[in-house]
Image 1: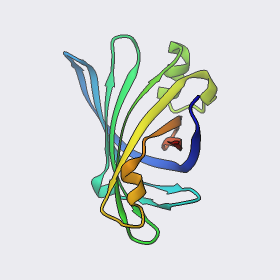
Image 2 (image 1 turned 90 degrees about the vertical axis):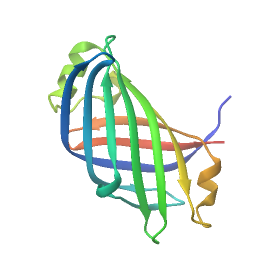
Image 3 (image 1 turned 180 degrees about the vertical axis):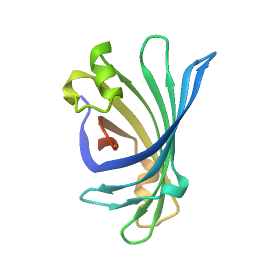
Image 4 (image 1 turned 135 degrees about the horizontal axis):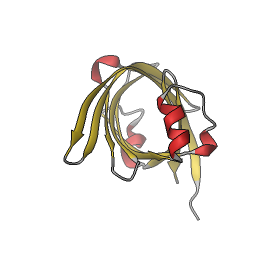
Length: 151
């Protein structure tokens, strides 16, 4: 049995998505993350827009594979690098509504991520030694994840 502990909720603002089109690996899109916030019991702060992005790959099976890299700044000034891979998929009609920016019940599609962290902060050094999982939902302005530490 896997046990988890809530880490934080993170909200990302996606400003622009550049569509590279169909590549040999699938349809490649690159999203500029324009910032965001994160808040939990043990840490909170902002996502730095100058050091964040999402490399998306729409696979032939309809699954979107995510490769995200973010820089977080805690409310007390520590910097944390957060990277995650993830998958998002669902019934074609649900995914079409999501792509059109409609509000869609997050239980109607699969959206999971596996974050890791890196920091030089003594206070938040424990992040260097954990794995996490996140459950996402896509809103018009960007994704929101409930991130949990795996105990």
